[in-house]
Amino acid sequence: MVVPRSFTLAFVAVALLATAAARGADTAAEITLQRALDAPLDLTLDKVELGKAFEAIAAHAKVSVQVDEACFDALPYGATTKVSATFRATPLRGAIEEILAPLALEQAVSGATLIIRPSAALARIGRRADWDELKLLQTLRTQELPKLDINWTDDLRTLLGKPQLVVDIDKVDPAVQDKAMAQVRAMLPCPAAQALDSYAAAIGMIWSVRTMPAEGQKIIIEPAKNWLNRQLREPVILSFTNAPLAKVVADLADASRIRFQPEPGLYLAVPAVSLTSNHSTVQQTLDTLSGATGIAYELRDDGTVLLRLAGKPNPNANPRPDAIIGRVAVPTGKDNTVFDLYIHESDLPAELNEMRKKKLREAIDALQQSLTPVPPTPAPLPPPPPPAPVTTAATAPATTPTTATRPK
Image (tube, helix red, strand yellow):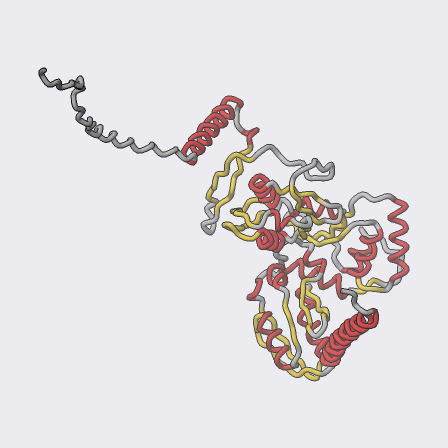
């Protein structure tokens, strides 16, 4: 069938008009939300849990507010974190910022919805932050650096009023560092967090804060891959039985704060998996997943992990350790938790490995035999019927014809 050109053009025009109308509706909804964020708010919150606080704000201001679950995972008290505040004719945007700033959270407009999510600096802590880390992040977010020739390891400590603060910068080319420092000086005055963002981006690294029991508070500026390797050593708790791989990866990302990038088609090739981790590290969990499903993982320089089907060797892939052959659950004695101790093939002497492999072959052979169908024994044939009696027809004895003669 040949479609008239006029009909095709009309169809395209209708599609474009529909798209434009949808965009117009989205824009109108966003503008309405922006107006609501500038409107004054009168509200009192007295020790209200964070989620319920935003529900109250949304109901009072008649706006849509969505709180990312990652916020609760990053805060010391999780979903039970409570806030108190009193707003009188305070612009809604400023009222929300007053709640978010001490918790290192941020707000963003998405269409007609206001999204509450962790700041990038909070997410890079890689676990639940402690209150000292939140206070440091708030200081970095609010404290302005004056216009001066700043030296990170000296001036920053003085300007922030934290002489014990350690600024740990990974080795960087001096020329690159000078260029990055010049870029920061051109931005000043600005908040310390903004200066750190600019400096880290200029040298191709990221920054994060950590409270170390023996070393105090630190600002760490390092390559994203270094941060990723540190996160791989963090313990996680997961338990899935025949669950969708997409769900397993999403929960592992939430637990580890690592961003996983699945190879196209991976979730179709491996639709469901079973995976358990009792305080095993993220790397041990990934090794277990790899051994059970054949999914390989590759660490990227940008701090992400690529998941792909194992196949052709990849020179950038994470070197996989020798095979995991067992797991022992060791009680920690605290809160009824256990620690998974993984046994690798190299942990056993050669003779034990040979014995293990022999037992494994025997078990596989026995399983294969039990699953191999046995052909049924043919039923015995019935005895042949007795022979039928033979009937013979009676025959008259042969006679010689005689001729009768009359006597003469």
